[in-house]
Length: 101
Image (cartoon, rainbow, N blue to C red; front, top):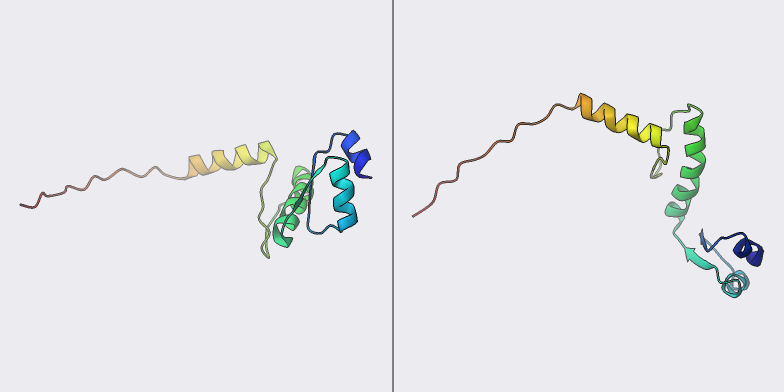
């Protein structure tokens, strides 16, 4: 399996668990393996899936520790435009500082 992945161009696999046998197979195929924590692995996999739902118009509400990072460019650019236009600019206020003698 790992040799087929390497032939297809896969160079790194991110996962939560891996047996010693699979680690050796990945190493033989020259594939890097990153063993990540539970929450980071869930967030990575779920974000890819949620990007597809978001493209279909589904509103995504991250809960229960999910760190949502959208890779949909149109969604991100719309979000940044709306923030910029709805947030008033703050005036810079300079405080005068008295020198002590």
